[in-house]
Image (cartoon, rainbow, N blue to C red; front, side):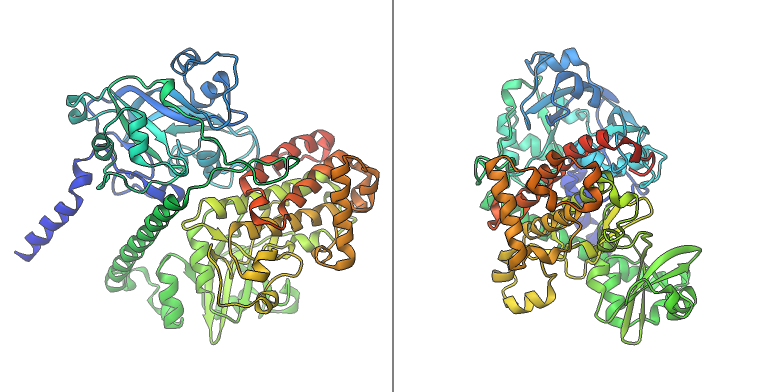
Length: 624
């Protein structure tokens, strides 16, 4: 009887989704490690459950350079350019305004478990990953999980010229929707500040029909950027229903080259925060139940019980809350791997090189509890963030095992003036772009958004191809004000020269403090000097001189004293000015005047194109 009651309650709880046309993915699309082994997952694509296996469908794509014309968007999404021009009432030769909603007609068909509109994408650069392609290029119309499933290339084995098969999110109406007059489904790309009721009204769809189509349990649920919702339509969508997502007016001087990206208002921010909190609570609850079952039934089966018991209870439980799959090593295994932590294997005061399972790794000894860093790193997935492999607890010490970065830290690399790569603008720009991409991910694609707080050249590591990855996440956490810590304590814990003024004075933790620190790192790449000169009174005059040169619009010759001498022979002063302007924009005293990391990435990409032209002989295939 009890079991029957539980079953009925379970069915009642799930009934909105069982009868709904599809289920909304939420932020699950941001995780590239999703699995659909037990059945279709909304984190991949929409389930093939409609009346027809193939149908006409529509997508919303927001125009962005270089995808801002009929031809470029039709090529990217494999759409008919004539139909694209017709339905958007747009000339085939005209350029769409940036962030203009473009209606894209596609053929949507079943492929296995899912509906999808098929297109392909040729990788233009080696910094592309499945995540960036899904969320930057396709803006969320594709997901990294479906890309990985559709292609045979490894996540970090993507190279220039590779052709990827890209399944786009679309769906066909169910029988019930067809009876109610629905002829088409529109995959609408959610933007900051969007609300379901407003979007429904704009496309002349009832809120009830949109609620049903997406499996929502309320009329105006929380929705997240870089996700899609389905809008049932009785007629073709019209260009009159689309809008331009205008950015906020820039709060800076006319000379500021950056435009601010629209952020949600206070009400939307509160809604998103509540939604994220609920997601986190649900995730923790589900993980506790899952781990409880695994502890009872799985400990003997997987053979890890003895190894796990060697750890402290607190460390074991906190790590297990997020990732039961993290490998745990015994201390004796680390001793063998590092030749008893010999000086020959020491990379720095607390980091050793070792070999575990035939793989070269970096083993870092830490005296404090590392569970927060472990939990954070195992929840993230980005090429430009250091990868955590395993952990170990021994007596009062903790050991974390990371991927090995052959070229060490950026601060050490910049000191190797006789190295050919150090003398190249190509490599320096790519390193800056890698760091910017990593921060862009932290600020926009983690849940909740994350601030690193300790960005500096010592925490940027370089692999054998000189690709940069951000390390040291011991202090990273969500954006909030740290009122418990006074300014002297923050100075003691921080990195001199990298800390934003609002953090030093008020303890404000927001993405803008990482932007400030990135500006310092960028100046280091230009000058080859250590970051402390930013806050030294004598050297601050140098920064003021740069600002004066920028305001006068001249003085390229005076910049010669700023540039790293090993770069002077192949130096373009116009390039230096662009980099210095970008750096100084990041170093604005007022946080709201600083560019976002998305804007920084865009600027660096443009600079990189020009740098490649000037140093083609150093642009080595397969390294970038």
